[in-house]
Length: 395
Image (cartoon, rainbow, N blue to C red; front, side, top):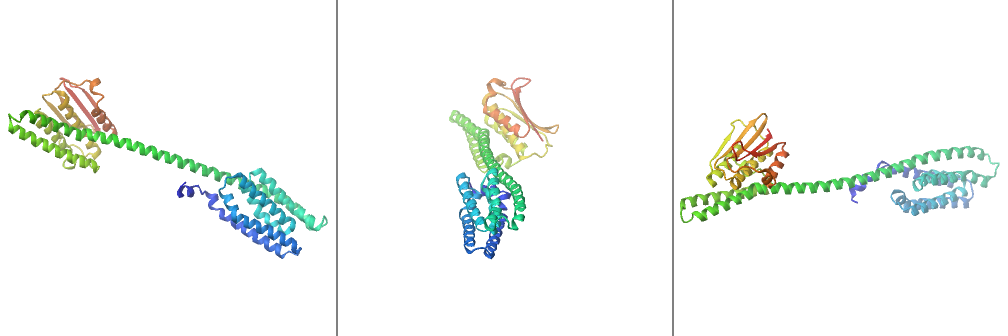
């Protein structure tokens, strides 16, 4: 687990644990001073001080680690057993050492489950009047004060221990929730990366299909025309060579724009109407098919994403005309209609068969692009035959 996760799991209780250690230190120092200043026997003082010193050393050496994060139940039970034994030794050696309970009782609730901790702390508190009886007998005046104080301490210890136990349980529950949340966030991040990778692959596939693949198709078509005309019409060969060179340069520009994640090169060097007009002119030059291109003069300003969708749709539609239609006339219209931009490409060719053409990657790509900007694509047979593609996107 990385450092950030460890910091996240350090909840409010763990961050404020230093206040408990202040209590432990004050309780230890105060009890040690009281035992040292007591009028009891030197042997009792030495035993009590040694037991409390062992508690302090044991806590600093291993207790803090066990309390903070060691989930080994055996280690917790061993630490609790040692704490009970040493605390009992100190209290039985001298009653004054009972103040060490302010240190021992909270630690027991941190080490044990609630019920075992209640039993252990109750027994340790009861050792205080027992120690008084052993050292001074039943007639000692202090006993009349110790007995009600012992009862109060037991009740207070149980209540305080219950609060401490609840805080610890909530702390562990929050830490577990944080771990689950971090695990969920990692899974979401992984799925997002995978979805992003898949989307980027699909985008690149559409870009390559709509630009480079069509450009190479044009070059192949021009090359075939050059081969058939090489011995008969040199002027036409030169014109086709010029077109092939221009198409290759445009393909290269598209490839560079794609690598640099820029807008299509046609849009980078001009407006959308100009780019659509260039696509229409290119089809006419390459195939000799007359292309009528009409663009509204007052098109609204469009986002780059919408312009890319419209341009790619025009490219794909004209490419389909070139490859499939056998048309002798093509009409392209780009217009603003009721708050939307509509692109219509129609031809008088062999028509459109949905079952045959609907599964093509080009049409799927156009529909996907249109949906990304809230638009819709329709492909149908024209009123006078041929095919008609209509794309409408929000302005």
